[in-house]
Amino acid sequence: MFLRSFINVNTIVSKTLFRNLSVANTSESSLTFGDSILILSLVLPSRQETCRFHLNLQTTTVGQLIDEIKLEDTGIEHVNIFDNKGQLLAKSYAIQSLLNFPFTIQLNKQRTFLFDPINKLQIRENLSRTNRTDGPLIEDTIGALYNALNIMRTYHKKYHELKVEANDLTGQLEPLEKVKDQIANICQRYISRCIWYGLAGMSFQVGILAELTWDVYSWDIVEPISYFIAFGTAMSFYAFHLMTRADFEYMTMTDRLFLRKFYSEARRQAFDISLYNRLKNRLFIVHTDLARLRAPLSLSLSVPPNPLKCKISGEELSPLDVYRARHRIAS
Image (cartoon, rainbow, N blue to C red; front, top):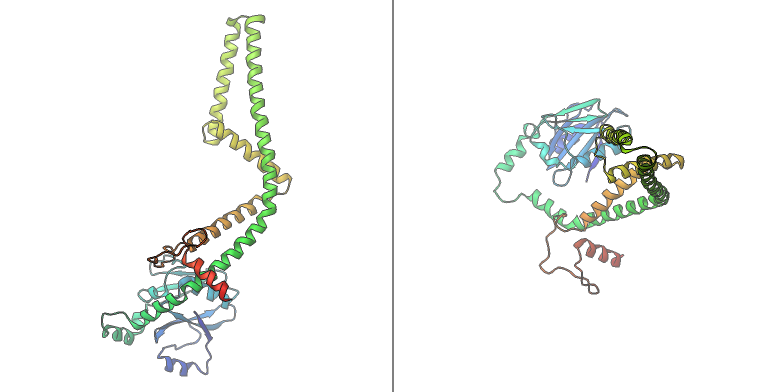
């Protein structure tokens, strides 16, 4: 969790002495460490005020820090954090890993703040850690205990948010799916007609050549005509390959005809294909996240020695399903 507090000029000295921090100028950004809390001070561009973020080293990630900065200053649209090599850090990157190397924070791709590694700013904390035993630290134990006690509640909250988003996306896609199905049926009938028309054209061509060969002319006259027809057909196949970079096959040709007809019908019926694709992609991502939440291994949960099974169907139940069922009963 984040704790935010704006720095007041009159009380900055007393607070820094109490926390054993070294913040000299309130108009500059700084990074300090004390009492196992990482304190990040940033000058917000909209209000030109210094905001101090208290970061928990055990649970906070880069993504949570970015979201907190955007929440504090709505004028900030882009927040990027880079390491000492200039590589962009992922949102899942732990804040605790930032203690070992310099990093920069970029706001709106313009203002950039450079922070030194915390091991140069705080020596007392490092010395106290070296004098401890090799066993697990108290902060690590508390962090692991907090994670174990709150992990199911966090997953349940995330599961509820994803279910609400999935239902919302399904509701938005329902009218689009009906229009899409109608357009798809029109395109499928169009492809069927094109295939039958092609067969009819080839049959008519064979009939004409047979008529010219046996009734009107002889094979000596019709042979060059048939040669040019066959060579022209081969040239059309070659031109198709040059324009599409694909082989002239039945599935390739039908797919191209389907897409051309689909886009033309979509423009005629004012069907937004880009919106439909965005909603479908987002729904797929949400369903994938829901499937991951139901898997104990993906959640880093221990598998029970005796898996819980449903008394009615006999299927195994995931810990998240058991937690959700107990939560509904308790509420």
